[in-house]
Length: 253
Image 1 (cartoon, helix red, strand yellow):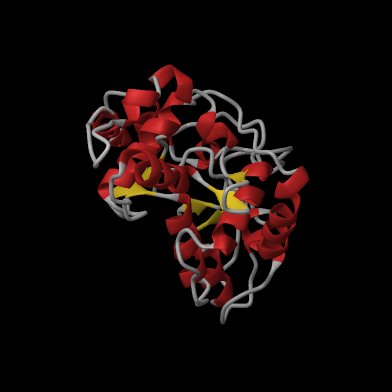
Image 2 (cartoon, helix red, strand yellow):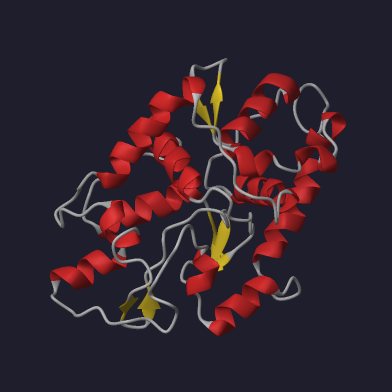
């Protein structure tokens, strides 16, 4: 979404070093510089693996009034594929729930433990650990049945112009994907690697934090992380990346 600021200034977009023709979903990893791609692909160098290990420790830590850990009920192997399917429709609430929402529901209802703030180190570590269990599996969210109205709302949001720059997500990540912008290449805005380690922030970040950052870049008022609007947008964006392998924890500039 940094594209919007430079578009406003009238800076030219030039052809990228990666193929400009994009057929189907392309992971953000395809648009990285070689050095950053190497950092992501090497498990000894990827800084996001520290969060995965922290998440594994939290997974096995007993917390709350029930004296339970996540591992008391769920084996790591049981979590394979979970990240690839979220967000999902939750009959208990009548809305969508993502991984962070699911973690907090389990803590609240089964562990008697306090909820974790969405962008806290602990939550990012747990969701990175859960995403890591699905690494390599294709993204496959469900958009039919009761999830359909939320999917349609997310799709409408993707194409809606917003902010003082009056641009939509689609204008950057659909229309200009693969184009160069100074030293950057505009990606498709896929979320198959999140939560990821962002180098410019020097920390892990969630899908919803990226949504907030993009809207702020457009000089729009961001919605709250965990809001119904962001959950619907997350479902649509995850569907856009259907078939892409889960890469958690990805590394991005």
